[in-house]
Amino acid sequence: MSRRLSWAVLGLVLVGALAVGSGGRSGPPTEDQRVQRISSVVRCPTCRGLSAAQSDAPPAEAIREEVRRRVQAGETDAEVKGYLVSRYGEDILLQPKTDGVGIVVWALPLIGVTVAVGGLVLVLRKRRTRPGAKVSDADKALVEEALRS
Image 1 (cartoon, rainbow, N blue to C red):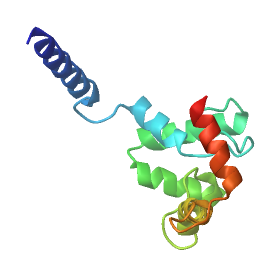
Image 2: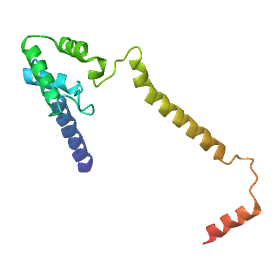
Image 3: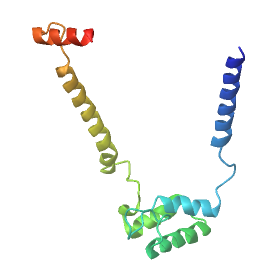
Image 4: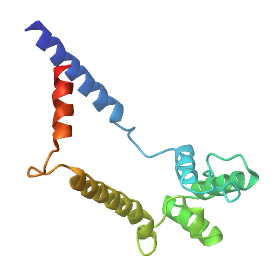
């Protein structure tokens, strides 16, 4: 009984730790947090593989400073992103839009995985031996020999 009790206590401690750890800070985000959050979804114009928050390139630093100026001026995250899109184009955002042509970017991987899994299922079904299939005498002998050894 004590073993079950110890597992129950361990489970409660784990659930409690996850609950405490997942709880966010109360109150609005700080200026630095907002700048970091916005800069992390904006692409560096010269690096293309990094966000403006990750890059040390001068254009990325300029974007971070522009984001900071606009956050200090009281603009919302959407307004800051809108400004950056109007200046650099839609390509500046790391996440594609979820409407129009942007939905294709989100849907193609899902369609590809679905087609691949479907093809795999079809191939495996064709390769599976059917109940009425004939087994040769040579195959039966191999199985019997393998079972004896």
